[in-house]
Image (cartoon, rainbow, N blue to C red; front, top):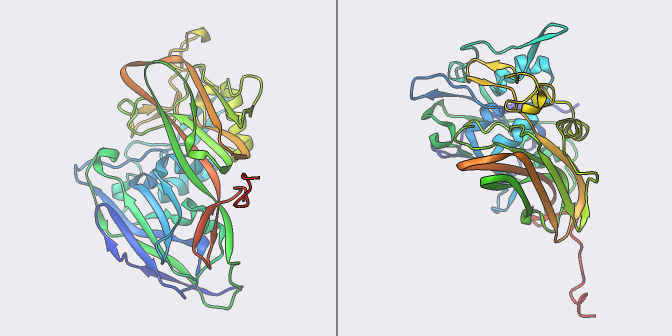
Length: 390
């Protein structure tokens, strides 16, 4: 068993916009335990701080890791969307304790009061992030799949975190203490990693639908000539009305994916909440309080024939969980050549002078060669130079 010691590194540079750390070459650290700790925030408006489903990761607009030559190896842009669905995979007991204390994520745990009743564990003015002192915690390895694909980092890297501004969070904030990078240095001899590795990186895309019918058919140009694993999708509606950017369950939502002229899912694609949540669970695992609209009538659903339920209520955020947390996921596991098309529709219409935004997050296969420092997308066919001339 390897022996190690924990070391703390102050940022080489930190402002209200970004923080940068340099991990020197020759320092052998455990790649799966890279984290940023020992910091806190203060709301300059004097109010409490409660985050959305991504918790304290909502502070970040971008996190990236580069080699010492400046080549970007892995990144996560707008982690709020991806970390939101990842944090919801914690079991109910962990959501109630660890998630609220360490990640400060939006409450998604419940108490089962009886066989027919449940209640949200959230209590008014509990676990305010500004009252947590300097104990906030960011698991960088949890965010970057490159770190999870390696065992030992020893070539030297630069880690950069870019912070969201008040226009995104909705309030002015400052750090009560600057964050520090926490690493576990390996002290005993252990084998080095192979010179190359393959990992998944998240490539985002989004489609906006303006006033009128909520439907589109769009080619997703962000994913040409790449190998895709899982593809997540969700609608946040109008950001003005949904400032936390929670994924909403739209009435009559239907999604179809066509790759290289072949429809991925026959029989009308994903056209019901039950199919949407079953795919999500099959491809990613169970989530807490996910797709609440699959179990209760959604607000405005006149076909239900009963009074619509508002769902669980969060007293600190002032929202009901009636149609929130409605993530969708499709298992692609295919190489995309020059054609991937997404068809999306719902029975609702986009209000006048408004916009619905559908986010798409695809896990894309990527490879990194330590010796050359080159990053490339895995799965791209290699043709001879004169392949097409013959």
